[in-house]
Figure 1 (spheres, one colour):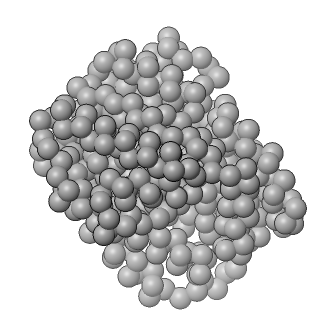
Figure 2 (cartoon, one colour; figure 1 turned 45 degrees about the horizontal axis):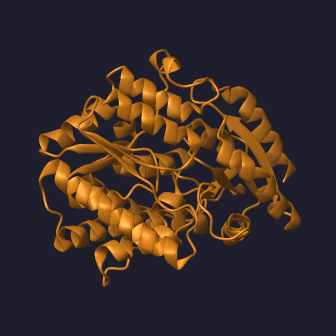
Length: 370
């Protein structure tokens, strides 16, 4: 499908993507978290771009971060210090894990870009005070953008931005739903590329491409070959080979609990409320990650619900090495799945040290067991 190839091409040519966006006279604001208020950045007339590591050797970042920081944080800092992110006009850091917070400090002190903002969203999300605080933080961030770039963000700007992101999220949700209903109509690596590409590409281009992909998938019949239905859970999946390994072993990807997946695009923003309030309400209600808190059992109930909804035969936890929040959550999530009789497997990945052969063997063994 030629539309999918465009997403793959974007992921392998970030400078080209950035150059095309710059040609439209847009500034690029980078971020590293699915909690970044992208609607505000877009409403200001800028392009929000999710940052991923280029997987280059870590040399310059060694002077700033310990080796036991996760490869995402170290890799993105290396890209910044080496000049590979010089197309950025600014960066936004929602505070999540300790490593991201320390990266924020290092980033600010090195001052390579014109705009910098810490967006300290609440960690506990299910209280009235959290709602008030969330709206206050978004209001402050809006003022920071306006002051830095001399452009007032109107409600009309916000409403147009909300419609754009709702449209993109709606179409991504449709693609995931079609894959769950007809598992195997799209390769897992292609699905991952579509989501990650949507995070970095020009949003107008993404909005043009996604409906065509949905329409083509809707016409496809259920694949004859049946596979074991697999849900992936973790932080980010920046290794398309994982999906290839799952499919080669007789599995099929049907859903996820990932920052580079459903956690990013889940949930629509209400379009008939005050824009900042509506954006805040989605951030408060969406599928949470370990850096946020709703109830003591919210994440456990969610992973079980996700597995049941997608009729999963098994769940693969794919955690970045040295990712403390997800590592702390893993035993409790595993306990929830074990109680429900849902088979699960833990694998660790590292952007700089991937041993896909060993991982493939473990995935193959797991899929043969379930």
